[in-house]
Image 1 (cartoon, rainbow, N blue to C red):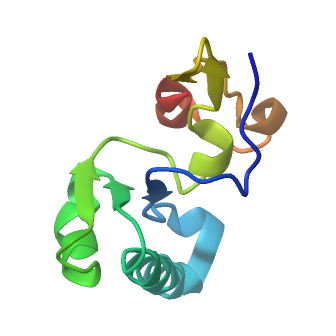
Image 2: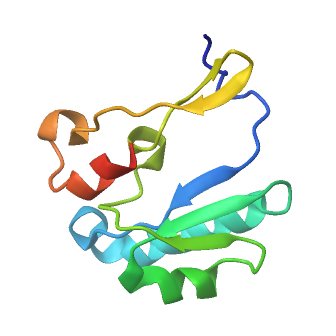
Image 3: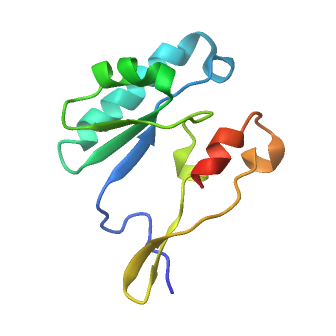
Length: 118
């Protein structure tokens, strides 16, 4: 069993739409614009999935290029690098691991929606 390096070839990039005004304050729209710009740039090179809360789905779809898969999944915020699954190679197959995300020791609440992603 091994874990691919972060710089290893991969099949897709997954990004989450920023969702919590209490984290971004007056800069929430700026954060959303930056996430869309990142997704749009990456989508020129590989497939991209943008995860957004149901209430943000329309806004995320408008901001993202047509070739980006925008999917509804209830999340607490854009922590997917930390709250999403880690991938390992086991018996020459790519496997998503399931683990417990606790908001970095319960520092950022709520995290229950993000915990369901991992």
